[in-house]
Length: 112
Image 1 (cartoon, one colour):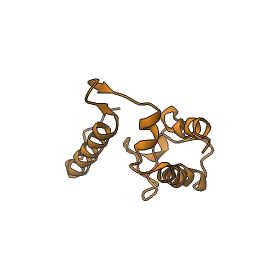
Image 2 (spheres, one colour):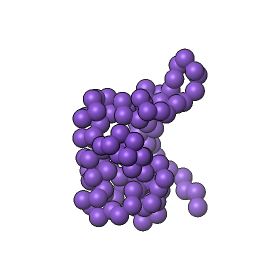
Image 3 (tube, helix red, strand yellow):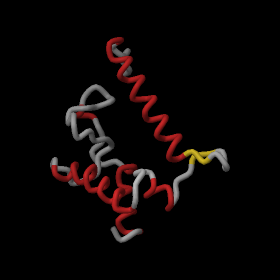
Image 4 (cartoon, helix red, strand yellow):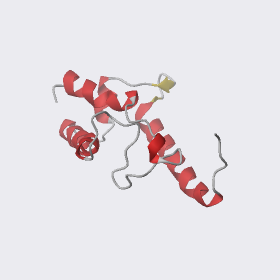
């Protein structure tokens, strides 16, 4: 099942990994506690904006899934590249994925 990565794709994949790592450390790493955290203040503030900015982002990203025909929240969604998959084919992406259900919690918790 494992396949060696095409060397031509390595720069792109390395950059994506670096971007995700940077974003994760910036948004979820708590220097004081020394571990990753997620809580009410972090759940909204990760958007880097106000409450309205966070709501706008939720509507844009997860709403984009709905506009593209989703009836569940997908594992990943690239609105600019619908065929993107880290697994080599979008056909094996998860189309009902737990991490992506966070907006349902936020909508109820903060009456968005």
